[in-house]
Length: 576
Image (cartoon, rainbow, N blue to C red; front, top):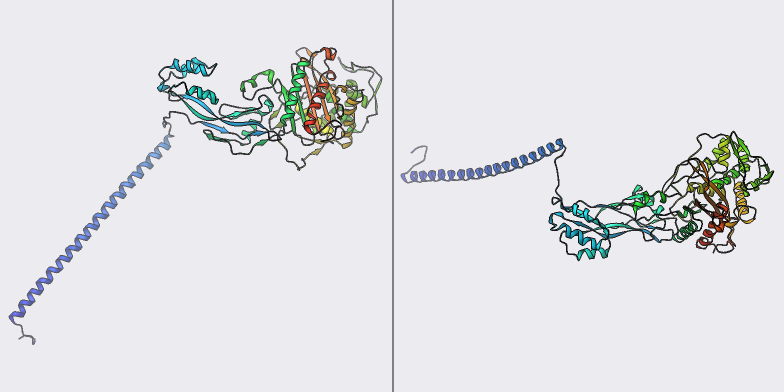
């Protein structure tokens, strides 16, 4: 007995068995825990290894990119079988009435893979049967380089041509759709519309204006433009009529060239404008032909006596004279070795009105001297004749002003010599004289209807009214030089101008620019016209004369008689 507990041999044995069993169970649990912990450690190691590998990969890529950036990537090249075709999608151009003048077409362009060409001669010869005038030698040369995978053969094929080439069965040839600019009216308004290059990018005229105003889209392939059409101020019917009458005048008077326009005197909108010989917008090379220069905008000329309109207006605006004021024109004006005189009449006194109607050089010179050189220059500047002018169809040629503006220059400028301007710029200034005195800027874009144009008045309504009356008298009274510009039933007014063309040895008497600036209807003028004939010849119809009253004036009458009904006027001068 110990502490009151009695231990027997059977109880001792049970105790030993229980102790042994408990120790065995503890060992198995610990081993299971050890296994679980080992598996977890293995998973963590594998994850760390994977993360480390990914980090090393990203690090190596980053280091490579940094190295390439530091080296500038100069040796990177991309091997391509064909160039990326980039062209420009352009909006349609329509006239003021919505008639199409220019638009994009989807056309097939032909290219070849020289590496698979079996017989260069066969390709060149067969293509010549479908494409007349094709340069066979150039094709052979382009197809000779087997290292090339792409060369253009002909761009902008017609549907018929593409089908004929397809039927030749030449495996090296393929087609790609591209955009091509089309001008459905041919030469009509060619100078104004301008042209595009082989990638449909604007080169000149209104086409270049669209590029400059970011009104085109760079595209790959043949995606037509979703932009709205560009509406011009031109009227196709009036444009065609003007061009046809100018062409007939060139034939009738054997003239070297001709130009003309019809302008809205209130808005500055150009309803028609032409310079002949014209150009075909499809033929870009014609723009390099000097004979086809746009004389209306890109040439400057001394236009002669049409400038007397400005001299008379300046004198009336100054207030020193009125239309009835008499001027002594009996003696020539002398400046050193220079003498200025009138060739067509003799007389002692002429009124300011008669100076205009009889186109007196002496009288115009006296009126200009009465105002002075500085005043003359300021007046012409107010009319916009001495500074640069820009239109949507491009810049107008810069005026050529006298280097020295003294008394002699004041007199010569008074009758249209010694100062050369583009006819477009002259017409815009002339419109100011008949529209109530407001200076305008010519535009080829259609103005929004119902919105009055912003204009600045530069001469008084009274002076403008006096000039309108003189222009009408010059045509209708029988006393002026413009009677052959009359259109029965329609109030036409205007002024003649015959300018000798300067040459190497001075002015050439037999080579002139004959011009007539007109307006209608004179009671409330809406449209101004300008017609100029370059180097017309004396013919039977003109009794050998080459002056504007015999050729430019009757041409103006034919132009107005043809286009006035298209503009809403009928016989009697009433709007339809």
